[in-house]
Length: 362
Ligand code: G6P
Image 1 (cartoon, rainbow, N blue to C red):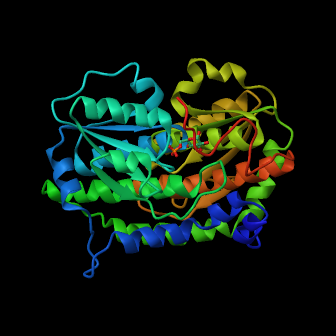
Image 2 (image 1 turned 45 degrees about the horizontal axis):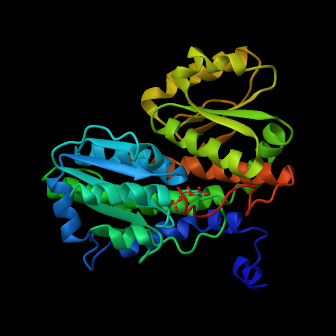
């Protein structure tokens, strides 16, 4: 059928879409660059970001996880306070809003009903909204004041991969543009750094055999799994756990390294797989400590670190990239490990049970 043609030589859309991520990064660089090689962004969006005293990011699922990374990027780079919220909660449990809020809706499909419900309410209150989406002309794009496109190309697999990294890349560009509008001096060129990310992604896409081995060793038979990390790595762990749950049906949890001991460590038994991310210099020692804590209780540990922070025994060492952008590369082995775990467990990778690509009911 037609979908086989689109998959080309790939067995699944998910694997194809994972592999497309370096191209998507380069596409985003081209789309958000002017003829002088500088950032190119809508003047109205720049003005709205400059005007905002607080940004509210609203999203669901994987897009929410990209929003958590986006919060950190906008706060660190553009010095604007940001809250990231799950759409279905926000609509019924709205926090006290700031005086000049700007709402950012992140949605691959642009059709998610939970997010749209918030947009309708935000508009009723008279606030401005920006939608970041992969589908120009989608409902959330049409109904918001402004749109930024992801340029990731159609994402077919239910489990989102390339849209997540595209969302983070576009949020980084938005953060830098907003910083410049506010006269903040930066020694961070997002277009250059994203080009480095694209190359790093390619290196990781070439390490599929190792990811398959990790999946086989750690996840082929287990009934649960934990992902631990601190700072930005924690956000990626949430996404890693979601990816694994969605397509392999393994009960997985993403956890903040330091919070583990306050309860969840009770679940660690002999052989429990714990995959740790160690890409953040300022928390490298503490996450290493958390790995030792779980290993001492019998966990079977796998550390994915970053060049410069690695220790002997780490299973994957990611190429070094700018600290702001580590989630863009650390998520990639997680996507591949989930993919291979699902294959080993004979799951329907592209169409997991009970899930839909776009959820248009509240
Ligand atoms: C569904 C999909 C998820 C996705 C979420 C939000 O639940 O299965 O993969 O992250 O919706 O979708 P959106 O299109 O708004 O990003």
